[in-house]
Amino acid sequence: MVAVLDALAETRRAKRPRGIASVCSAHPLVLRAALRHARERAGPVLVEATCNQVNHRGGYTGMTPAGFVDLVGRIAREERCPPKQILLGGDHLGPNPWRARPAEEAMAEAETMVAAYAGAGFRKLHLDCSMGCAGEPPALDDETTARRAARLAKIADDVCREAGGAMPRFILGTEVPPPGGADHVLDGVEPTAPDAARETIAVHRRVFQVAGLGEAFDRVTGIVVQPGVEFGNRNVVRYDREKAADLCRVLDEEPGLVFEAHSTDYQGAAPLGALVEDGFLILKVGPELNFVLREALYALDLIASDLLPGYGDRPLMRAMEAAMQADPAGWQRHYKGDGAEARFLRHYSLSDRIRYYWPSPEAEAAVERLTAALTGVKLPLPLLWQHMPAAEHFADRPLDPQELLIWRVMRSLDVYQAAADGDATPRAACS
Image 1 (cartoon, rainbow, N blue to C red):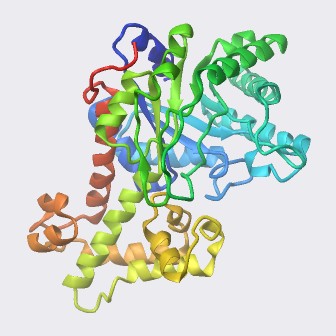
Image 2 (tube, rainbow, N blue to C red):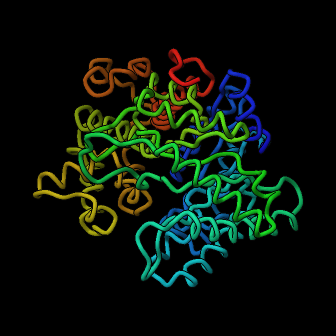
Image 3 (cartoon, rainbow, N blue to C red):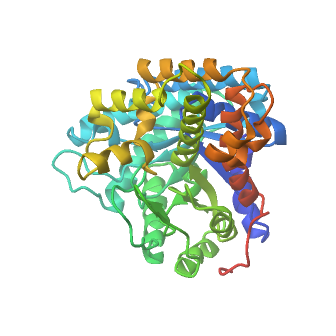
């Protein structure tokens, strides 16, 4: 499956750019939707886990890399998605989860984590050592970042070489948007300066060569840069290709590389198509998929409240509110304002911090109650028009709630796939 990554730059050189969506979610229903989507179109699927979400100590999901692979594998078997279509990636692999510690302690943890990812079968590895650790500046210079990335690349290579099979493909780059989106309303985001991108590439290439890792650098597939896209709690900054034109031309000097774009959630068809056409051939998406899943669950909660005597008044939403209030660590530092403002953001923020709470016992019980209550029920068309009009084709026939939820996530994946396939690309601004 690494051949999919190897082919990306070639499509751009041939002036027929084709990209790939990177699904960054650990929610089982999102993973199921992504794997079903891949099976139905007989194409590749790239699934990524992040360093905070999944690591050798469990992350916030409680899963190690091997555990995440087991989860994806089980769902793939259930969905009849062949393993040959699945590529696993690790995102932001570096000291970030331990950055409050001294650098060497944090890097020791990062090395163990990268070894666990490589050993579990992840072959697309984004090495991100750009953040400062205890006593260091918040953002590090390219030289320090590159030296630490080279350490991690060597660990990954050693593990993969011993295991046999494909060697890892690396993603490098330091201009990374905040994971999960910004915490404030955004007026705009400036793209990475072209010279900054050139310097990042040059420094990493030199440092890898000095460390005896020139062959590993040859397997660098992409560079993370900021194309000028982002989302906050309430708004989205969409891609402006004219502002990114000079940055795009850096790829003409580096024909073996593509750009990886983070925080492409909520962009929509035309901006995503423009990103692919301009060389941003890896499109990361996660919060949007979790958001539309929550959107569909809340719509069903409203429908059940209106339709079923004894179900209650939005018990799923009430259960989620109780779970978030009982353990505010997942949202409190991200959502400012008075009580009403924070309550609104807990449920509806585009950054989707509610995702941390779906594995809670309260949430799982409420979702199970909702799906049990609606399974086999014929939903009246007017109620679907009221609460989820795009799902009107589910009306007046026995409902399988899981099928509706998967359908909703797959609608978003369709937009990404169309952009990746070149079906949504407008006229080029970069040449």
